[in-house]
Image (cartoon, rainbow, N blue to C red):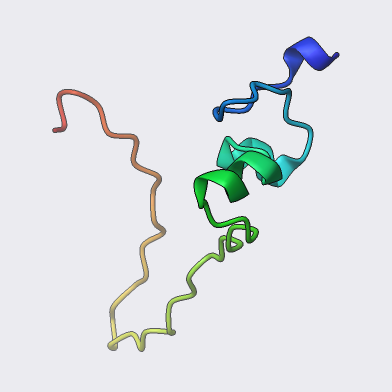
Length: 73
């Protein structure tokens, strides 16, 4: 089980167990020694759009997900 966990990118090379440390790539001790901020990352929030007033006769089209491809770039 511990072989599946990523290692610290600092000097120690220990296995990371804390989800915040795994996302950061450094454990708390190495991060403090390297001067890296140890505060948890901000949580992602989905932006909410303000409701848009439709003009008479206008219909709202649903948004379609777009996956860029090499041809579309």
